[in-house]
Image (cartoon, rainbow, N blue to C red; front, top):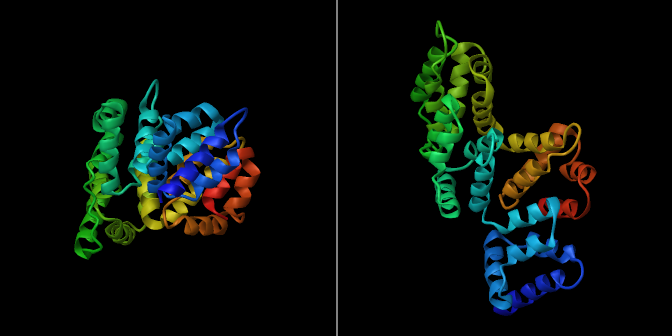
Length: 308
């Protein structure tokens, strides 16, 4: 094991030695190892060459390729923590990133992200969210950050009907205004299996879909976050396929979003299902669209990650 690590560390070092950088062995090595293996490799490299591997990579690489390589070299919860901080640092807040991460992670991951955030930045994620967001959107994010979603694989049909009725009474059946707290309580704490039942019960009670209720009763970033949770609940493969397609649709490509979603799903067992869903929804394969929209080493890296 140690001998193999030594050889890999040497290959890494040789790829960055001298004039220019040989990106291909870097791509080959990092895309064929797991997160755990990459963390071991980082320690081995530092032991052998006395330099932080990620710092060395940053000094040798550039642009979207550099950003993606350094993202891959992070543990996923560390990468998420960095993305959340990036979304809130400086003027303005990138609500899309907050939604994509906090609405999609398990209780365990959110707890780990909170710890990583504090260790990296000596700040509280909850405090930063409280300072950088407002209103009902802030309330939803704060609820999600508590990581109190039920994760049992059990369904309570009676509770599903009660929740559906409570949401109907808080929104479409309310004479004036909307009680967003009822929506938030259910969407942030019920299991995904339970939510599917709630959505079906809502259809029966209201005569229209839960998404219709969100569209008519909410707006802005709160609406976007609610709809993200519904989409993840009903078809999380479709959610990620849509996100990848949106990053490549129209004029220009959103490389940051592509990197977030592909790196974020690159070690998850459902990536093959996401690729199948992408082809089903949009006609073209993900490989084909990435090949058309990206170029150079960045393209080679993304294609290696999706392993077509």
